[in-house]
Every structure is written in structure tokens, then in C-alpha cells.
Image 1 (cartoon, rainbow, N blue to C red):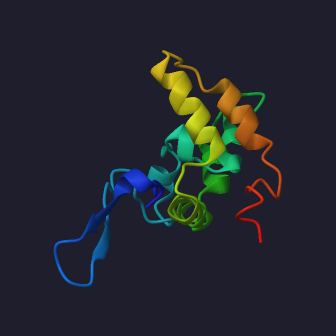
Image 2 (cartoon, one colour):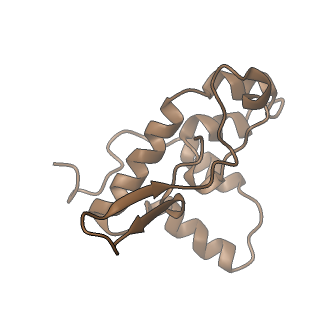
Image 3 (cartoon, rainbow, N blue to C red):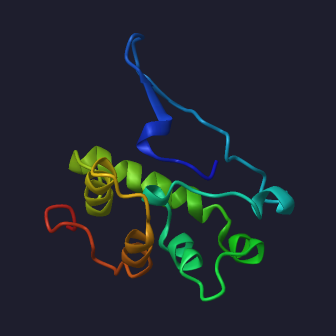
Length: 130
């Protein structure tokens, strides 16, 4: 899918036994389709740290670098963020911060890429880490 985030999950509560539906397959590609995978991009707010590292590469992003991070791990990262939002009832701290900046007119994501590229283990709030 390559773009799993809360915005791309629809919940149907009308029927008994509600169900979730994944939407927005615009960025989806088979991993074997190297040509398409090499040009895929992600929404910066929901991108994994590896994507941020590519954006900060000394020579800039390249198709080879995108191919190096494209795997099932991207969707696992996205699912992890969705579960975080469901459990914590809030977006991750960097999403909250950058949504404020975007509302204030910020258009560059350089600071966001630096923050994501340097995410450390144990970034979860204490209330969720046990």
C-alpha cells in the first residue's frame, strides 16, 4: 500500500460487527515492480525514519535510495502508527507539531526529516510503554 495512515482507514459502523476498509491505493505497488517503486513518495508526516534519511542524503534522494527502503516494513510502520493513534487517542508528537506549523503556513519539511531520521527507541510516552 505504501501510504497506510489514519486518513486512509474508513470505519463502517452502520452494520453489526463494524468493519474497517483501507482506501487510497494511489501509491500502492507490487514490490516486484521496481520501476514504479523507484518513483513512489510518501506523505512526510507519516513516513518512516528511513524515508527521512533519504530526503537528507548528501546528494539528494535518488531512485536507488527509494528502492533500498521499499518493503513490507513501510506498511508495518504505517500500521504501528495507526495502532498508536487508536491506543493513545492522539497523533504522534511530530504529526501534532508539524500540523500546527503547516496551519501557520510552513511549507518545508526539512526539520521534520531531521526529527524523524533521528527518532530513537523508547519514543513512546511512559503511559504506553509498559
